Length: 229
Ligand SMILES: *[C@@H]1O[C@H](CO)[C@@H](O)[C@H](O)[C@H]1NC(C)=O
Ligand SMILES: *[C@@H]1O[C@H](CO)[C@@H](O)[C@H](O)[C@H]1NC(C)=O
Image 1 (cartoon, rainbow, N blue to C red):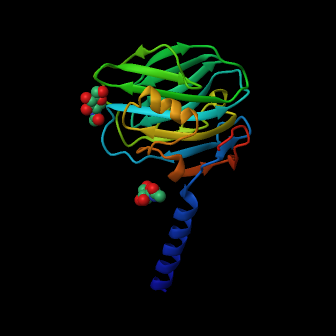
Image 2 (cartoon, rainbow, N blue to C red; image 1 turned 90 degrees about the vertical axis):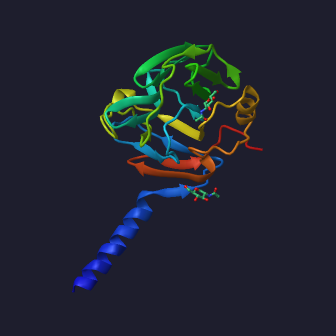
Image 3 (cartoon, rainbow, N blue to C red; image 1 turned 30 degrees about the horizontal axis):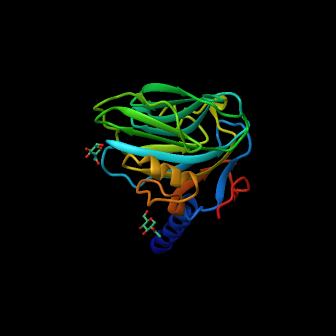
């Protein structure tokens, strides 16, 4: 009897685990967030042990939202905006690090696919922004800070608590793909390569080997708005 219960327990646990976390090569695919909600999101599991002194984050997004929305929400215990990329309006993004923020503006069209990269270096505090391979104005924040680890990383929603506190009016509706993160600041040449579809062995989040967990109504589909060849 005990043995049977144990066996049942193990098999339920195994199926729960295998359902809960997929590890996949998502090359040529996107996460589609088809409806506004406060419950549809994807959790990304990073390979990250040491606090972050430097990073680069790149992704592609396609959305026809004109209201503000979250693009990448990284929170740690007790710090909801440890690292957040937030789009306030067309042509305006905010980067939060350790709850401080900078705002950057540039030319952009509504409802056109965007390749977005941002990087930050603790020693100078300099944050760089690259939109469709072009540099936007550099800003500076949190010089000397170190980004805490054991994050919960969420796409589709903005965290106001560790792993929750979602608000429909900040949710993302649209498609996200090619998301990669490194623990270093990429060179302008590398950013251009990424924009043109190369990948440079990302060590924190790797779209070619992504560990993630879909919650609610999020669907994986081929990316039809890019040529990957
Ligand atoms: C972060 O970048 C700075 C300068 O760009 C470098 O000196 C430092 O070693 C880097 N830190 C890590 C942990 O790689
Ligand atoms: C994918 O990532 C896991 C760790 O998260 C690693 O063990 C594995 O070697 C990686 N596979 C490839 C093809 O890089």
